[in-house]
Image 1 (cartoon, rainbow, N blue to C red):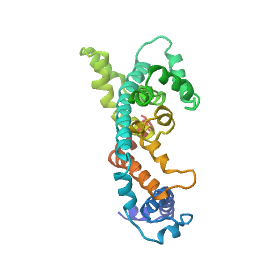
Image 2: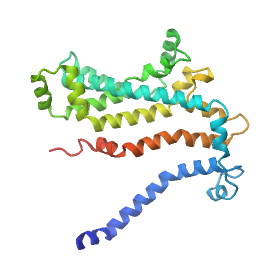
Image 3: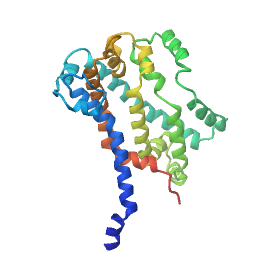
Image 4: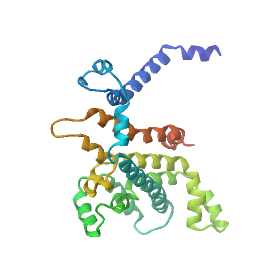
Amino acid sequence: MASISDKRLSPGGIARQLFLTVVLLLMLFPLAWMLIIALRERTPDFTSFFGLLSGPFTVKNFTDVVTSGPFDTYFFNSTIVALVVVVGNVLFCSMVGYALARRRIPWKGFWGVTVVAVMMIPPQVIMIPLYRLMVSFGWIDTYWALIVPFLVTPFGVFLMRQYILGLPIEVEEAARIDGATDLGILFRVIMPMAKPMLVVLAVFTFLTTWNTFLYPFLFTNAESMRTLTVGLTFYLGNQSIDWGHLMAGASISALPVIILFVIFQKQIIEGMTAGAVKG
């Protein structure tokens, strides 16, 4: 007990805790700034933190955002798109990752290098060809354009392939001896064993899809099909910016991501640290 107490009170431990506390405060500061602006009745001085703290506070900005305008439509569209894309990535990336990791397929090395190469292509490079493809399909202003191109991602394939390679193959061989098919092994053996990485993939995909702006902005013209990220830009005017309502909308938009991380933080840490220690 004495050694534990001494360790906790050691200069190195205190310095480590102070450093982590400073990092935490730096990460929370933008969120606090956003929330304070959203709660201000007026924002005449938002250039200094103490200037924001002095003045009347209200929740009117939040009620205005929720009750006025098509904010509920934006929120619904973002939720539907994000959830379907998450399900698609968890399913299809697991299938492709399993095939590249375990199955004997022609040119397996070439396909693995292709997945990594595609990850290095910026999304701006393919936005024009992808937009022309959506126009040719007649998918502009539809959920198809917001969902189908993103149902499987190279990052998700690479993530699942690398994780599946580290799983013991003996369990799969035992299942195959018992008569399990490839799909049976994937859904009943591989995916339960890869649950921590699947949670990481799901959270990362949800976060990316929820916050994406470029493609929803390109693929939607009708107000009824806009997502939250696109809808929030309409608080940016040519002459002025409605900071109070913009920050209130951004706060509401960030809430699902924060809740998701709080619920699955244990699985996220397990997935991110999986494979760090072997043997």
